[in-house]
Length: 334
Ligand code: GLU
Image (tube, rainbow, N blue to C red):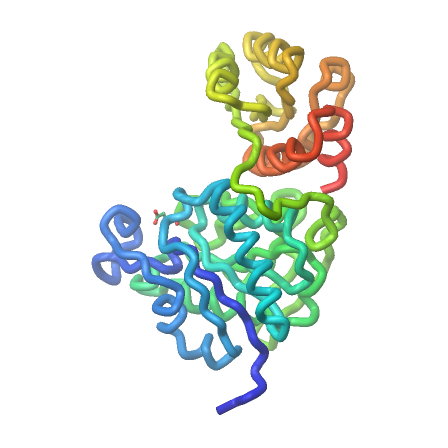
């Protein structure tokens, strides 16, 4: 019995990392026909993970991450705060999560957590039952990162495929490939190698636990929707989302961040009516600057956040203010 292994809290939400398919070759149909394990069963498959740390297993959900959104983000943040308070001896957290929305949950936590313990989100591309699954190694790498002094103070982290990524920068870029999580323009913060965690750079933007967003006690976030641009788009989605209650709209515009003329008309009308419009781009990399046109129309440039991350930040920004200039400041800070 090793009495002094570091304590790591493992919160389970489900995802491929917790999935069992029909057989060892099923890397395709398991979301529809397989089964999801809770965190104890998912982590329990790997004695190497239990050997690395004293794990506190906390079940949260056993779902695909397509079923995780703002209500779950808020609940998860509250759960992490509660566990951090109840387990002061814990050095860090891992959160097992499906890869589909992992980048959104990670960025939300990066913007809202008030704990200085390391928080690592981890998923897998191949279910735990598959030949050559990445579930076990990713779990071990996540636990090693959560325990590593070198990984402290970097904000919320995403660990998969031996790579340590920043929650703000990372995005899922491939449906099936193991190297799906990339930080376009920037790359990984570091790696988990056989001899431990190696960190090469630190995120410059403000992040947890030093954030001005406070979601304690909230059960929902202001509604924000994403309007995806394409040649010939007429902007009907803008009005539909506003009718559905949107307080903010993120335009996933044509690169370098410009909607079609008809979309532009609808977005201008929305901004004039007090809906906060954030201009992002569908390119998957690069910045949308607060250029003259956007400032003139009281719209916000998304900086280099992709549309789904801009949506997370805008939802949180709207809990503080509706002033586009102030929201622009937040986009240049976080
Ligand atoms: N990787 C997917 C996820 O995000 C699997 C989807 C599913 O199991 O529903 O969880």
